[in-house]
Each structure stands twice: as C-alpha cells, then as structure tokens.
Image (cartoon, rainbow, N blue to C red; front, side, top):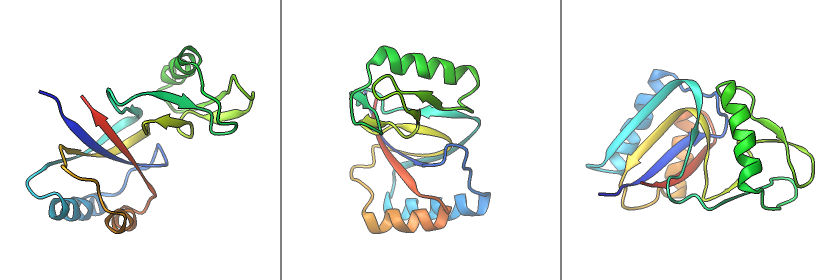
Length: 148
C-alpha cells in the first residue's frame, strides 16, 4: 500500500518551534484535516526531508540550470558527513555558493529538524490556512508532497 504525505517544514533548517506553538499548530491541523494522521517530529540533527518517488530533478537557484544527479549527490554526501550543519557548496553550473536547501527541487524538498507530516490528507492546505499556520509556528513554511 502506498501513502501520500504532506510534509510542512520551516524554510530555516534549524528552526524548532516551542511546545506551545507545536500544540497550537496541531489543533489547527486536526481541525483542517479531520480524522487524518498528523505527526509532529523533531530530531536532534537537521535531516533531508524528501519527496519520495515524487523526486524528479534539481535546479540551481542562481542560474536555473539543472544540476546533474552525480554533482548533487556529491554535495549531499559532503553535507551529510557533518549532519547537514553546513549545506553550502559551489554549484557546478555557475560556480556560485549555494545552499542545498535553496536549490529548486522538482518536486519540492528541503532540510529540517522539525516537520509536520499529514498522511493521505486528501487535499492541499489552503493559502489562508497556511498563512495562519505560519503565524502560529512563527516561521515561513515549505510544503513537500511525498509519495511512498
């Protein structure tokens, strides 16, 4: 059986909201996604929050060119060695310093210590509700649709 997950993360990989904000976010999401599994996860280290089989390609956030998988994987391997504390590398296309978190992933992905996962949500979170969630958590949010 396969699952679709809506993952919500901060655009700041090291951001973790306090417990009160997490509880407020869960109340809102339980109201929006009734009878759906909603899990709030916090890890000690920054992790790559992937999109599962929705992964297509990666593009440079500076020049827009596609980054070959081998180059991206090399940068990921180097960043993984220090638990993703340093996400910066020099892009192979335009030779500019870039963060792995700022690259343009098709479909979206990112890095985080804190994430919210909604299993098989059935629908997307509406923009007004996303804005409300961002206010509750105190951070801009990136949506990641994952399929496993």
